[in-house]
Length: 438
Ligand SMILES: [Zn+2]
Image (cartoon, rainbow, N blue to C red; front, side):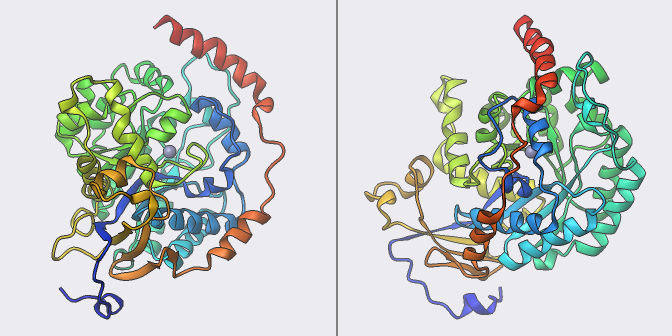
């Protein structure tokens, strides 16, 4: 293997250091950086109404959102992320261009899977929920044509920038859009990324709409395969798990977001026992106000002891790191390029400082990295062999400029749950009563 210039010229003794492959953040929404600390604690369906109200609308905000997410990822041990990206209506191409610019400047490996949907907002709720019938901006055919153009213009694997197919979720997409994305993914060998059964509401909706589980429906449509990654899966059952495992798909576990939104606990231990590939995600900053991969990995490791008392099933720190690296790489369709320290793979490397007080005493550094609260321990990061972080500082972009931009952005004072009385009262009467009866 020929090493790229910057790696070739360095000698690192590794004293008091730990070298690991870079983690993959398997699911986030970069523009939500602007909504960090803004959205009240609400269940997903009510939370969404608040998120849409305060979604950024300027290209510059999307650029800084990408930079911020990339910086947070690098500084918490990640070298690759999946951006399930919101697009500004009417400026879809320009939004992707702004995200690509941000990711290229930071120098992180990024899969951008635009969030696309052709059903109105209200379609994400079961019958009986009276919600505003906002129309979708494009038909399935129009979205697919746009995706084809975005792939042509922006998909650049050699440069670490990838386009993925990202239909929002079965609940807001027609079968035509779901299958069209799968066909486009097959034709270009791209990642297919979508939300899956994040909430009880979505579980009920699938039963109402299809009469079968959402997983079975996606399988029947030909949307599940080794290039498919599914965010959340909180409400999948054992039959869903076996079916998913048989297709070679990946489930992206977002434990912080699932708890913040009260969605539930994904059955990760059962998934692993069934041989289903699992990776970790932070989810967007509106439902995980930090974008810290180590935090998501810690919570995702210890959360499951409450649902399975057989300690032999529990996820170990070493097992969790395997999911964050090898599992994560497979989930973004890059298992042959990143995720392990193997000859022939790209050099996506993270060097941790074991001398930091949060990594003392010198016990088991892997266990301490996962189960402790490592703070500022990322010393150096290389992506595709190129140095991106040195001495704990990002080398490629001016982080002070990023923090200045974040400081200047005024919050939307209109945002807050008070605006959504009608949606909320309906949610309380329909959803909570229904849940109580189950
Ligand atoms: Zn999401």
